[in-house]
Length: 124
Image (cartoon, rainbow, N blue to C red):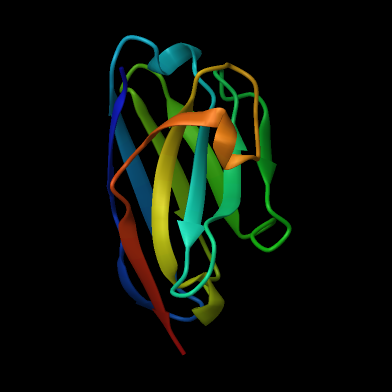
C-alpha cells in the first residue's frame, strides 16, 4: 500500500510559480513511477507529468512542457512538481499518483494509488 499526500497548492497570479509536493508512505515508493494529473471543473482528469523510479526519465504533456518540472527525492519519499509561468488554464485540482511499475506511464489506469488532490488557482 502507498499513501500519498499533496501540498503546495494555492492562489497565484498569471506568470507566477508554485511548487507542489507529494509525500508518500510505503516501502515501494522508490521503485514506483510517479505521476501528476489535474482536473479542471467540468473536465476530465488529464495527464500532466510522469517520472520513472530513479528520476532519470521524465515526460510531460504538451500543454506544460517547458514550464513544469517533475522531480523526486527517494530518500525523502517525495515527488515534486515545479510550476513556472502559470496560466489561468492551469487552474485545476492537481493529483499525485503512484504506479505499480517503475517505468513512466501517461495513462491514469497505470496508477494504483492517488492522493486527495490540491487546488491550484491562477488568476488573470
